[in-house]
Image 1 (cartoon, one colour):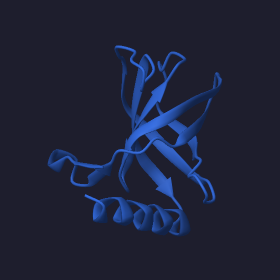
Image 2 (tube, one colour):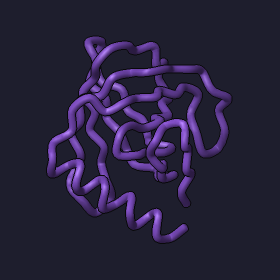
Image 3 (tube, helix red, strand yellow):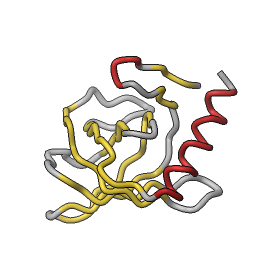
Image 4 (cartoon, helix red, strand yellow):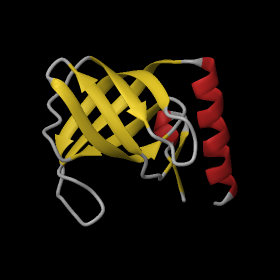
Length: 115
C-alpha cells in the first residue's frame, strides 16, 4: 500500500523494514512505518528524544541494507498499538549514496505499482 503525501513532495510507501539508528547515546532499533526517497517515519520502542544527524541502517528484506545519514525533523510519543511502538521519529535523508537511492527508488516504484 502507498500513502501519497503531497506536502512532502514524495509519495510514501507503507512498509515495515527493520531500522538501526546510531546516536551519540547508543543504538536504537525500530521499524519504518512509511518511507520515501527523501525521508521516513520510524517507530521505536525506546525514547526517540534524539536530535540532529544520525546514521541510519534500513534492513530491506531480501536485499542489502541501506546506509543513510538522516536529520531528525520531528519526534513524538505515540499511542502504542499492535502494529506500532510508543515513539516516532521523522527523518529527512541528508546523505544517501547513489546506489542506495537507486535501490530505494526501485523498491518504492514496485510498491506504487501495487496501488
